[in-house]
Length: 108
Image: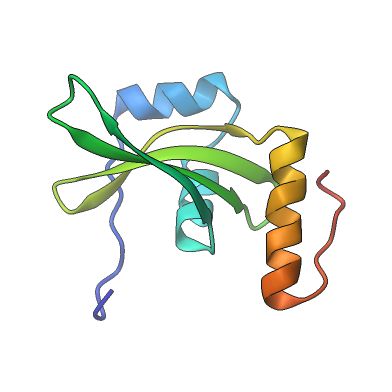
């Protein structure tokens, strides 16, 4: 990012969404800062045509999460995050294996 570090937009709203799924903000940040797979882009109606991105990624501890993110005011905002369903975990691991070689399947 041109020498700048990525900043995140956290407030009670998105922290509470994550907590409902037993995900910590730090875990979500690890996914965004890692090598997530962008799986879908959508425009959210009623939110000023805000673009939202559905991503799959892995935390430092190997947890594979699905995130819903957007950009607000130049910051990454994680709207929600949850454990990816098994099929998506397998898809993520297969894609990482294709890109980088062997990966650990212990999370699945």
